[in-house]
Amino acid sequence: MESLWIQTKTGQYPVYIGKGLRHRLSELIQGNPTAFFVITDDKVAPHYLDDVMQALDKVSPVYSYTVPAGEPAKSFAVYKTLIDECVRLRLDRGAAIVALGGGVIGDLAGFTAATYLRGIDYIQMPTTLLAHDSSVGGKVGINHEEGKNLIGAFYPPQAVIYDTATLSTLPAREWRSGFVEMIKHAMLDSEMFLSELKERFQDESKLTVENIEPWLAKAIAVKANIVSQDEKEKGLRAVLNLGHTLGHALEKEAGYGSWSHGEAVAVGLLFALKLSEAHYGIQLDTNGIRAWFLKLGLRVRLPEDIDRNRLIQRMYQDKKRKGETLRFILLKKYGQPVIQSLPESVVSKHLEDF
Image 1 (spheres, helix red, strand yellow):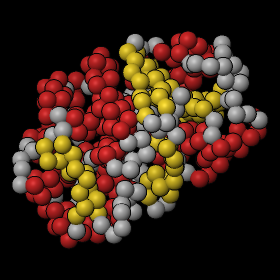
Image 2 (tube, one colour; image 1 turned 180 degrees about the vertical axis):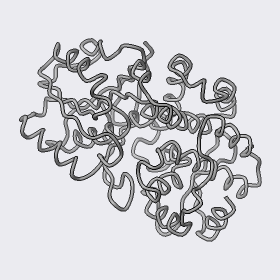
Image 3 (cartoon, one colour; image 1 turned 30 degrees about the vertical axis):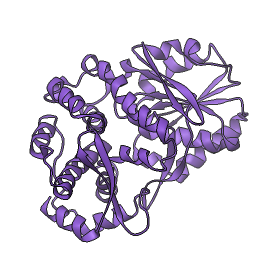
């Protein structure tokens, strides 16, 4: 088992990484919650819910609720159902919510914890590769019909317990989606980290639990370092949205589910690289990155039927926006991200070329 600590101005919490950790919850969870409320989805539950319930039952009474899998679960309706269930169970402020699943469950369960009784403890138990990113940093929330994650809070977990054995049941599309966030972390960190990933994971066949596990702590550490300096995204933390300005707009415009988060962010990363090359007059080997993405089985182009103007309007709804300018995370070089405002005319031109 590997462990690291996320340190912020408001506190700290551990991240545990290793195989079989879902069976060791009684030794990893600190304190003595009055009850546990496990929130999961209908894809994860058949594989891991019983194991987690049995492990938690050694500590305190445990309850569970299963929601439909997928981005639509991050809605007002599902959120209200979970709050209603907390009230029905009469959970008190000593109870703890356990988010067992991917990023959707982490966001949804975390937001439920942040708002029930003005905030109770919660524990992140990610079961996807993508959630190595979303489970760390304390961002929780739900979607609005006009955009992703427009309603939420900064509310850190008490712990992140990452049982890497749960990755073994991921479909190939989820592996690719999660690996894109690792690539993002590498781009933010250094050209060396990015080169190491390209060398070790040359194509989709290399994405396995055994290969990925040694790199998880390194990717998480990149995010941990940024979050420790800017917990509530007043400045620096926004760089973690590299590739997400276009990515989130594409997800919403195409319809949640038709593109996975990672697929959309992969296209967003390529677009950010092209913008960076044009804006700063540099070379970031975008063609080489595109070729690598193709070997990984990722999409590298916008859909032909996508409306460029509607995409731009979606980008204006991005929660990182300030005023009426479009803000992108660009790179002066790998490891040197910059928050850059760009005129709509420039973005539109490059979208057309892209």
